[in-house]
Image (cartoon, rainbow, N blue to C red; front, side):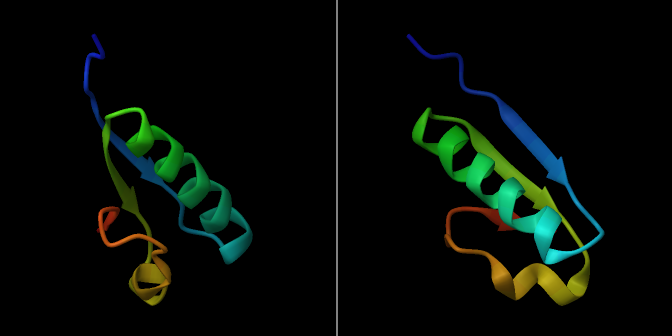
Length: 55
């Protein structure tokens, strides 16, 4: 049984930092975790997945 965790990933620099965080978030979601990405306002619309929350 998986222990589901709530995980916050933060990145505030560039898309080069955001894209790996998004890939990590997607993998963590497939493993049953709830992931939030904290980033700048300009990058909120770049989310690949509607299930990945950006703040």
